[in-house]
Structures are given as structure tokens and as C-alpha cells.
Image 1 (cartoon, rainbow, N blue to C red):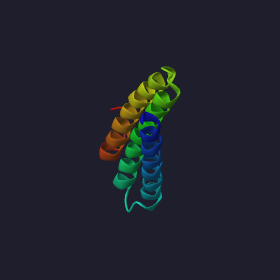
Image 2: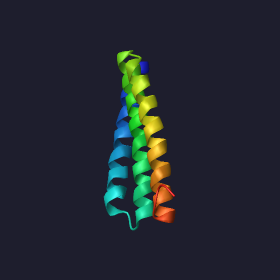
Image 3: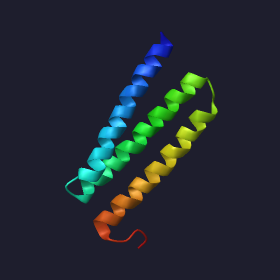
Length: 89
């Protein structure tokens, strides 16, 4: 039962990634593109966690944690750049 669920959810996450990629290219302004990029890294984290469940390996969970930390910092830096025009004051 878990195998079918992981496959089904993985397909749904891949569809969400494709829709986010479309929003990244077709976004009307820069804020929409930033939001699509943020959602893409969250969906990629979910996909990596699902791969970790599928292969029963803990290395995937550590990679997902690393991507989550880098994604948070990069999103905060990009938002600050959009608001003020510079990252470091």
C-alpha cells in the first residue's frame, strides 16, 4: 500500500513542479516568479523525501534538509533585494 501511495504522490508532485515551471516563465511580474521559484524548491524537497521513503535511505533526508536551509536563505535574500535593491546595507 505504501509503494502505491509513494508513486501516486510522486506523480502529483511532479505535476506541481511542471505547473510551477510554467508560472516561473509566464509570471506577469517578478514577485510571481519569485513565489514560483520558492514553491519549486519546496516541491523538490517533497520529491526528495519521497525518494528517501521509496529507497529507505537516510541520505535523501539530509539532502532535503540542506536544500531547505539553502532555499530559505536564498528566498530571504531575493526578497530583500526586491524590496531595497541591495542585499547588504
